[in-house]
Length: 259
Image (tube, rainbow, N blue to C red; front, side, top):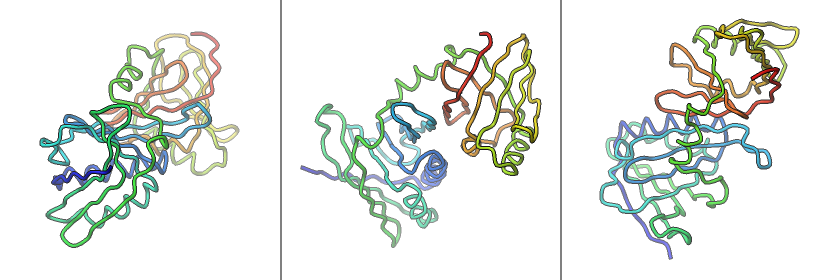
């Protein structure tokens, strides 16, 4: 049996939520939201078989965008066709009063968790209705698991790019047709390049490390560029780019000559 719960939306927080949802659509057109009284975890992922090729998440304070104090359960929401969902939500951005209602059912595995069946967001005159996806459409990852997995203590090494160099790399990658960016570390020098087109030294490590990484250039647009420097943290099988609000995991092919 389905039940309903309605929340008052905080206007400024709602605008911030729309921005983050729109950013996550660069990874996938399906987004998962996990709401509890403290935090809301938003994420999308690109998967090939059992391998996560790309994953991006945001963790925000729940009460920054909805008044959640009177609801005791957690809610999981799968948003299919997320690009269209975000475009619809943009028509509500300037509304003075917004309410959001979830139709939900109890989780068969956890009596503290509710699974959304549909979402209804109502502004002054416009109401957006969206059918939620099935819970198995997106792999379930909770905030505690994510925190452990992305602990920077487990990284192998890292390098930095200043924002000017990063923006140049994005522009250069748009000119050429290669699908991948090469990241070569030669005796500690970190060099981005496309075969036979260009190369740019972005950092020098304080050791003689040698490694070769390949990164799909489509993921460059998933990296937040409103910072002074971007740090690439290299783990065993993925790179992690963190900022104050988001985590971006990108898979890469690699060939380490030494560790």
